[in-house]
Length: 117
Image (cartoon, rainbow, N blue to C red; front, side):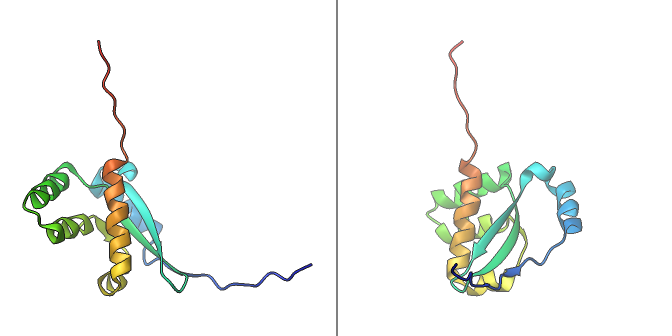
């Protein structure tokens, strides 16, 4: 039988269940919180606690996009990051991009339908 290599798992999760509970009260409940896990090229998992973008955040993003201010829109989205390794986020462009993309999916992840009456 082949031996299974024992891989050391490295996780960077700088927040606790208590911090999550505290944020729940500020963002309208647990349903508005998400955890995004970004794995870097060395296999380290970075955990980020984010809130769903609110209506005012969506309006600010739309306004920034209307002015072709992509950096502004990205900065607004990153305002949704509540907890996580901010130094890694600031210094690693790939991590920054991964978070922006994942937060963007929170906006588009809702479904709706129109029914004729």
